[in-house]
Picture (tube, each protein chain N blue to C red):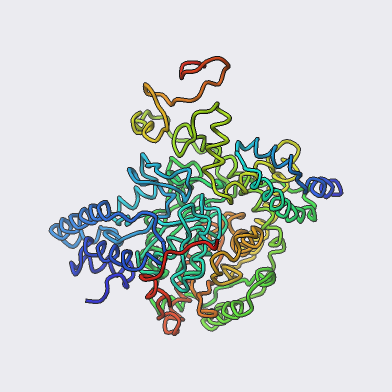
Length: 517
Length: 114
C-alpha cells in the first residue's frame, strides 16, 4: 500500500469510506512520521498518541455505523471524518495544555473547547496535537517561541515563517495533511509560502475565535493549511460560520461548494475572463529578484488560461507597516493585560499586588512580546493616543479604501507575492525587529482591511518555496480557492510540484533547531 | 497637517525614563539591560511611525473594525457556566471557591483583608 501520509486529506477520507484504511491506522501512520522526523524540525509542542487514538477510534465507530446504515448514511458523513489535523497551540482543547508559545501559559490546561475544536469534533476529524508558534503569535519566524524555534523542512537551517510556523512545517513534512493557524499580519500566508503549502487567511468574521488566545482582536483570523487547495477548502468548510459566542463572527452562509472544488480541466477553464490586478507597490521594497521572477511566471500562467492581468495601484501600501505596528501592539497591550498571575498561568507570588504583577509579567513574557506591549502601551497612553492610535485608525481607512476601490471597479482578485523573500536563516532577523516586521509587508495590509488572502506555492527560488498571494473582496474565499485551484491545475505537471521538502530526509537525525548564541 | 507632523515628530524619541514609565504602566518588570535594549529598539520602531505624518487625515474617519456588524445580540437565555472547580483549576492559589490575591489595602494580610 502507498504511504498513507503522502495522500491528500480528501483522499484519506475516501479510503476511510471504502474501508481501505481506518482512522486509527491513519493516526498511527502520522504519529510515526512525527516520531521519525520531528526531532530536527520541532513542529510540535504536544503530539499525544492517547487522545488522538481515542478520537480515531470514535471516528472508526462512526464509519462502521454508517456503513451498516447504508450509502445514504455514509454520504452524510463529512469528507474529513477520521482525518488528522494539526492545531496551532493557541486553540483551546478541553483538558489539554495551551501555551500560545509562551512561558507564562506553560502548564495551563484549557477548561473548554474552542469553537473550531468543537467543529472538528462534530465532523469527526482527529486532533493529532498542538504545534509550535511565535509567542502569542507575535512574529514571522517561529523563533519567538518560548519552547525553541522550528526548522523549515526544505532547509533545516532556515525558519518556517511564522507565527503559525509549526502548523505549516507539520503539513509540509507530512506529519498531518491539514493544519489550522491564525493570521494577524501574515501568520498563515507567510509560513505557507515559506514551507511550500497552501494557506488561507479568511475574511474578518468568517471563523469564530471563541477559545483562541487573543493577540490583536480587530485583526486576528483563523484559517486552514493544506498541501493542496481542495484540502484547505474542505477544512475551511469545517471551521467557518457564525457562532454567537464571538460577536464578531458574521452571519454569512458557508458555501457547500467548498467541498467540491472543480477538477483539473474545469478548474483551469474557470480562469477564463477573470480580471486580476497586479498591485505595483508589492514589487518594490526589498523584494528578492529571483522570487519576483517566479511571481511573474505564475502571472503568465494565469494569463495563458484566459485571465486578464492589469497593473494596479494600492497607493497607501507603504503606510501599512506603521499602521499595523501601532494598531496590533495597542490591541495586544490590552489583550495581554489579563496575564496577571491570579486566575491562571505562571505566577510569581509573595510580594504585594504590584510587585507580583511586575515579576509575573516581566519573567513570563519573552522579548518580542514585551516589545509589543511597550509599543502598544505607549501608543495608547495619555498624550499620544490621538497622535498614534487614532492616526493609525484613520490611515487604516485609507488602506481599506484602496482595496475597496479596486474591487468596486470589477477586479475579481489581486495577485502579489506572499513574502518579499524565501525562508531566511534562523537567527538572521532576530536582532533587528524592523527587518523582521518587513517580512509581512505584503500580507499585513490585507489584515488591516479585513480581507481574505490565500498563498499557493508557485515554484522554487534557490531551492526554497515561493508563495503566490491571491487577495479578494470580503467573503470571497470560495472564489479565491477556485482561482488557486485553477492555477494548481495548470501547473500540475511542473517538476517543482513533485518534490518533497529537500531536507525532510535529514530531519530525523538532525539536532533540534536552536537560536544562535 | 503641520500640527500632526509636529506631534509625531516631537514624540518619536523615548528617553530611558520614558521607557521606565511605560513599563510601569504596562506592569512589566524589566531588567536594566532590557530597558537599555528597548530604548534603542523602540526609538527605531517609532521612527517608522513618522511616515504616517505624511498623510492628511483630517477628514478621514477612523476604522476600528472592518466588517460593519452592529448590535450583535443573542437571546438572553440562562445556561450553565463552567463548573467552579474547572475555573479555579489553573489558579496559582485559591481558597473556598475564590481566587486568592494579595491584600491591596494597608495592614491586612489574608485573602479577607480587603
